[in-house]
Length: 65
Image (cartoon, rainbow, N blue to C red; front, side, top):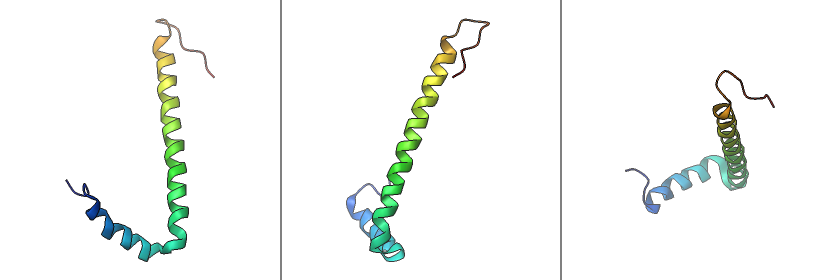
């Protein structure tokens, strides 16, 4: 599989550093981390909403939030 070893990541990191510059890389990584946290929390919320609908008795709908 591609990119399993750390030595495979070195050229990619160097290319990103050259393209975006050292100043913008930490900001970009920070924004990516925030986006991933938001995405994970939304997915978790969707799963919990699905479980509420699944628990509703047959013929009835789950209460809306």
